[in-house]
Amino acid sequence: MDTLFLFIKAFVVGGLICDIGQLLIMRTKLTNARILVIFVVSGVVLTALGLYKPLVDFAGAGATVPLTGFGYSLAMGAIEAVNRYGFWGAFVGGVTRTAAGITAAVVFGLLNALIFKPHAKP
Amino acid sequence: MSRLPFTPDEYGEIVSKLTPPSRHLRGYLRAFWVGGVICVLGQALTLWAETLSLGETTAPMFTTSVLVFLGTTLTGIGVYDRIGKYAGAGSAIPVTGFANSVAAPAIEFQREGAITGVGARLFTLAGPVLAYGIAASVLVGIVYWLIRGWVL
Amino acid sequence: MSRAGKQTFVYDRPPAIVAHASIAGPKEGQGPLAEWFDVVLEDDLLGQKSWELAEMEMVRRCVQRALNDAHMGEDAVQAMLGGDLNNQIIASSFAARALGIPFIGLYGACSTFVQALVLGSALISGGDLDNAVCAASSHFCTAERQFRFPLELGSQRPPQASWTATACGCALLTAPGEGHSGPLRTTCGTVGRVIDLNITDANHMGAAMAPAVFDCIAAHLSDTGRGAGDYDLIATGDLGWIGRNLLLELADAAGVALPPDRLIDCGASLFYQEQDAHAGGSGCGCVASVSCGWLMKRLEQGELRRLLLVGSGAMLSPTSSQQGQSVPGIAYAVAIERED
Image (cartoon, rainbow over all chains, first blue to last red):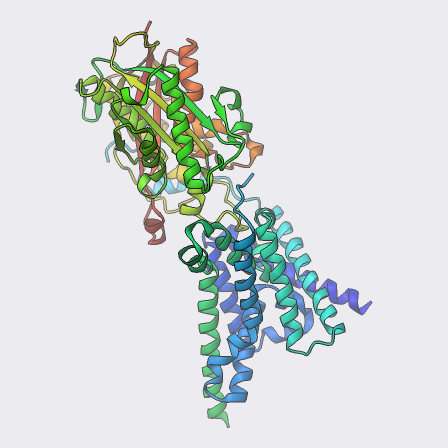
């Protein structure tokens, strides 16, 4: 039962975060690229203000899978690294914590270019 | 400009009157359920990672990598653009959308070569996300360092 | 050749359209005009290595087909006028390389085909050329990657966005009185002004172009002293159905009679609503293929006698829209009439 509740929380919170993006797509003239940047930077800022961590504790993947969660990882990484290494931690922590995601995107992206051909849209 | 009956402002009003709006309710529903399902998938992966007894830091990495792999592969077989057309932000905002934004130009520009095509274009869309995300995290780190030094 | 008013050429020796050809892509070939096109492609890539080469091959085949219909060799053609949407119009120039016809590259965005007809007719009517082939093309995949996003990116289009047609159209013009030349004549052509009513949404090309189309039609009618009623049909290029409504609003407010039942838009005619092309088809190939495939055939069949074909173009580039500039529009009009 707890597991089911976990999934429901992830579904609802993740869906709502995506709907904020959908709101920006339909109500503003912001391009997709700008919306993604806004999401990541908001994630960083909200985490720094201590507002995003409670959401992650509550909704799990519902808060970490959207791009705001990427911002959360960047900010948490930077803060933890400052705790560990002092000033220079600010330059290390963000990328270290998100390295797996970024590297996976680069490697799998390149592999895709090797394997697949562009498709025409129907 | 004698022949035109409208000023740019008047014309702008007529244009917005005659342009149909996006179908809002449908858009929100689709974004909600697709985005929610991707997050549920992420949650399932996280639970699976726990049973694999990966550490507290490696488990999220596992989840992210698998989602990224799914995103790029669905892009490669030409499915993710259809999901995106249906779901809008529902598939663009999750990390799979980030993977799609890396894989799409990589596939598209392979005919321009490995270096100037794939290599250079890989981050056309994801580049701004990384640039401003990383810059913001450094800023947060520095501010945190300053406050910590000042408080202690 | 003489002039009427400020913007209109009157072709005193009206050139004949002796042959025309149209090629449409797979999606266009499922639309309402499918049976009118001479060729419907089964494959967007035409067996080529890239979308750009595919577009080039489409232009080459289209010109070849028109020449075959007229029993004319490439050597006999004195000029090819045309263009496309690619940077530096590579599809047309590469096709001209393969055809070996002297090439005059043009760019009028989606209005290029009508621009070519206006200029080609002027050169022939003035006696400077005996014949000329006018061609224009567009390809969804080349345009999309150049102006918007990679094809595989999952993004939504707003309802006002148009769908770049994968299509090509080509017309062969000759000086009058050269053998059996068929009934179609170009009788006058109007060069439009670049008009900008400050539309900044690069997706909303119908809105950006409608004022230029209106300005060009109004200039044509006032230069020639004709009324919209003198034409059986006024066909605009690719305003789409939203842009067509805007054109009617503009005409109404300016007191120019433009009967809605005689006004069609090629882009709005190219796709069914359920084909998800949103505002309609666009691209140089849209007006080119629809006029060569559908409208010219209707003229030949005698169903129409006088047609005013108005090509419209949005003069934007990725650079200008990224720098936040508005989207100026251009239009050209050519009158195509039956001679019996």
